[in-house]
Length: 62
Image 1 (cartoon, rainbow, N blue to C red):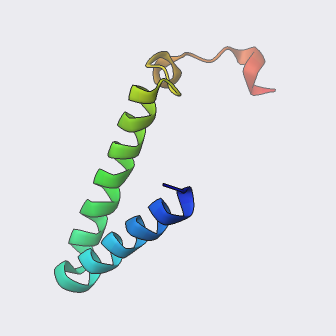
Image 2 (cartoon, rainbow, N blue to C red; image 1 turned 120 degrees about the vertical axis):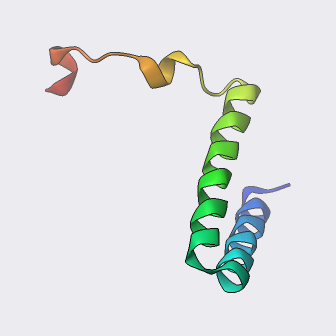
């Protein structure tokens, strides 16, 4: 499935949630979609747990 189709399905789900459930449901669906995306990338091996908890040095801020 192409990324365009996945994006279209996600947009339709957000649209239905916003239309039928209001703004609160829209935000809930968007937040759960983002969590699902991160978990999916983690399970595929594209992300590592250390990417979220890595500390920065002062050298990185320049």
